[in-house]
Image 1 (cartoon, rainbow, N blue to C red):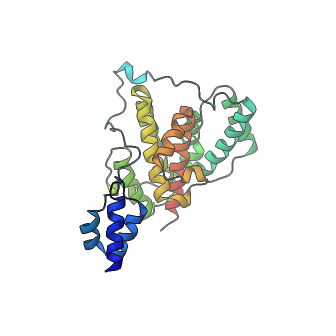
Image 2 (image 1 turned 30 degrees about the vertical axis):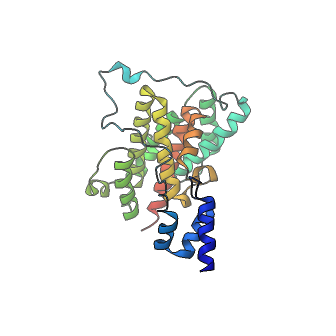
Image 3 (image 1 turned 30 degrees about the horizontal axis):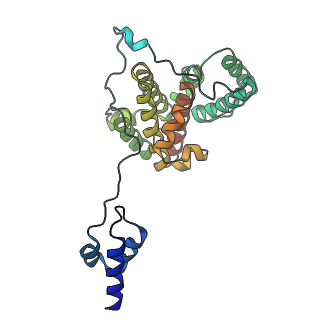
Length: 268
């Protein structure tokens, strides 16, 4: 009885607080749900709303007859853009290394590394380098390998196609492709979608990228290489995207997607 009186006293003293403090949670655990609700009222519901919401994803992202489709929004220079060239080159060096590892699952040769670095130095884009790698004879040979996708990879592809790309594939059609074809097809869909957002509103691109990144970090952290990529906050990835050039956002999407798909292929 004395304990109950003490609890009631605490209720009257602190009940003016709008948010539920930790002492109320402690009292609830001591009294149980029924008595806790009688004395303190219902526990506040947890806010499970996402930090960043997915923008509306169009079914068709390219219209050849609409000239507006090709007019991209211009992003103001970022802190990355203001870095000295030697610092940018360090990031480009790492990007090319990672790109070869996740696309072809091989180390980049010194000659290729030098050539692609020169391409970036001369104003080439990261997206352009990726397209060159997945459309050459080497990648074509990889796509021709008889390597049935794992069940985990197919499940992932079915889920992400609906959630991230707003497209629905049949399982049978995915079963007929291999790892390298799946990676290229899904990366191209993501890049097309990002290009579409570039012509509409860059904030749509940031939001889409943030939700995608949260999905990868929350469900597949073991396949991601660093703490930034493993961060499970969509708000974190949204803010990161706002402060980076579009090419960096696109290259991060490419690397994350390929890395996760590579990992899932190993799980039979």
